[in-house]
Image (tube, rainbow, N blue to C red):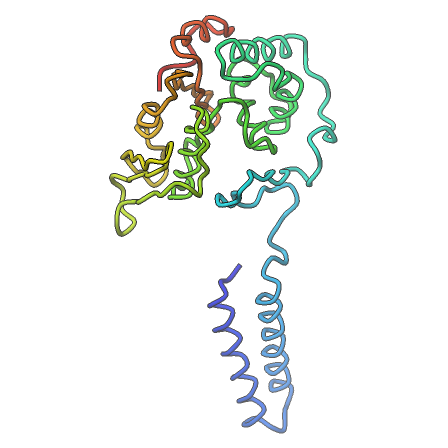
Length: 287
């Protein structure tokens, strides 16, 4: 879709061209009428594009845009399949083994304080995973990744979990959103709009500065800003701002689905979390 500037430029050009045809090519022959009709058609289409720029842009089933980070309340994200609720998508039923893995994963995160008890059920996770990748069997890695799928399906906050894109265009609003989610998981009432992110000058990669308020004081951390990768040092730096009355450890798992899953779990419970998960190797590690 052309930008507004391009549409205005094209509109002016073809309007002038139509005027020149009327002034200098009368009486019209076939070529003159065809040229005038083409100019008028473009002017009409350009006007439609300027008045209603969203015509034809949104295809059913494709999620458009990230939510505005300055909203006072966290809004629901748009549905990604035909604007239909998750329950209306006919995707079958989970196998008993899949339900068992999902229930075990939920119970493990509940046991260490990453989820509230009863907050999430296994069937909701399974439907979210199938919506993302229909027909794919759910093992332990898919179970971990299903939380991100549920998050993308309209659950902006899930327990004390933080969802960090592994490969995307990183900018100041996205860093502010990740910072706010991390601080919220540690028990601080901080919104993305409260956070100031200063990126390296001239669009370069380098050191970014993140400032945020906690208990009436402005705190700052620095992180390594990369265009397409998450800053590996941001969440560990934010982990220093836990609440003394509710100490938390930030841990991370990479299920391999383009989203890193962080969780603020009860301090000292990482070994318990990995022991409870049905996997041969540790899935979560210190952030």
